[in-house]
Image (spheres, one colour):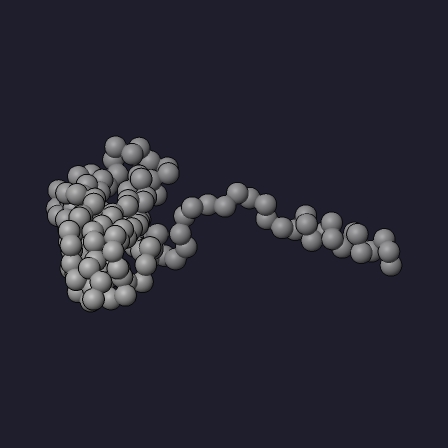
Length: 148
């Protein structure tokens, strides 16, 4: 019995797939939508070019909800898709189209920032994930919130 247990663990380890993890997403619709940039020349990929990546909203009153747009252009040679966004705070909510942005066309990411219970200097970060060669872009909002 003592010989069987180590043999069993060796068998389990040998059966594991130790292949390196891939960055490719799963799911047919997702794969159809994305150009796998890790296998292609970056010069042929979509290029996400924001008009600006940081926005200073100045001084606002606590309780205000700000609406800010970050316009962008696809300066690449393939359709651009905004795949996802992540924010540094639940008070910051991004809205973006899930449709393709053709080469040369414009789009935007709208941000709603709720200043309720936010005071003084604020800086919020929005990470934008796309099917570009550089998969992640970072947008920032900053300013000062006057307490009530």
